[in-house]
Length: 196
Image (cartoon, rainbow, N blue to C red; front, side, top):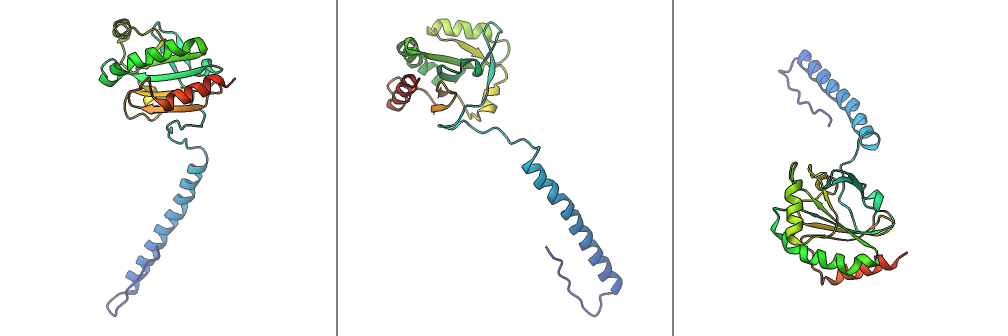
């Protein structure tokens, strides 16, 4: 922004010269910083993660199994995956488990892999196993103790569910509980399972 000067008969030439020098100095600093910011935006600065969008490739994600082994979405490429993010303390998560179990039992023989990702904290593996037994969960469970999936997928809460096709593309998603009779899920699931 150019400096605007108001001169009157009482302004000294020294004060005016100092004001002009200060304005030039400020503009030089701006001129040096602005290109650096622009360069940062278009080069080495990494962008924050974005939430997965239907029709786009799912971000990479790794976690651990309840037995402590490593697991990843990359390992599941070539399969249709319903990825459900939940926690033992989440009441809507508890309510959707019968629907998820029904979906898994109905479609696993056709190639569906359902993965439950628990975001319960460190040291909660035994509680998760007990919970899975109590609720009759037979699909695999991963344990994300640091809730990296929440940050990586920009989740604002649980449950959250993602249908991923064989090519790793997101076909459907739901933020909130899953309903086994949801026609949009059924349509997306049928299409994903039929695509080879």
